[in-house]
Length: 276
Image 1 (spheres, rainbow, N blue to C red):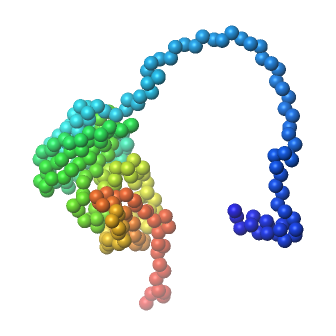
Image 2 (image 1 turned 90 degrees about the vertical axis):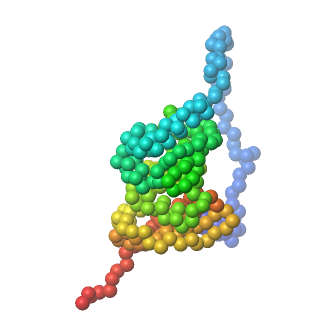
Image 3 (image 1 turned 135 degrees about the vertical axis):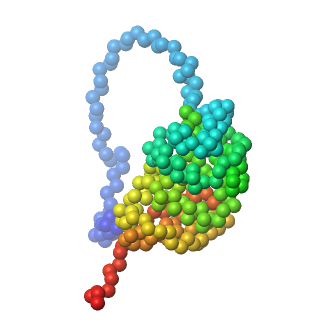
């Protein structure tokens, strides 16, 4: 109850008045006119229901064979280093935030893919997740690919359990600042990826820079509070107007489970005047 309402009730009590509390019996009942009795009509014959409507089974996820074939095509494009082919395998929401040139830049920075082995396939209501073990020029890495109902890549996540949490958080911010929002999203846990699309990450980053100015460089990255299930990392970022800190929370597998973009960044401080 609001404070003003509490004060009003106290005032009524002090004056010896009680709060009105009418019961249902005290409230006069409105007499509604009875509608005329409708004429009975012969019941209409209902058309038999279609079996396809009775099933109500969503047919949106891929079969195991379809998912494995799509995953093989995606990984083959990465192995051959074809950015145009890789871009064509993106879902519409990824294409809207990327380009073949951006894909080529990302592929140049990644370790070379040598071979892979497809592991589990898990179907969902709208997407299918395929797990693969990758052999790269930098070693072995597990990859989770999220495919839509057309076999296009809708998101992915690399297993970074062996990495330092500070490294993962720093690489996440580097991807954001470079405009690589698909790569930045790959550092998020798969449940968080369902909430934050690449376009959402782009909008949040651009909104931050409206207050802070353009990104200049990454500052200190500090591991702060932690418990047995999560780790909080503070990422100091320098912009051309102010410096601010992003709060990045990771789980035990070094998947980002929360990102706090400042809603009211630190304002620029005035300088001493006059200047000699």
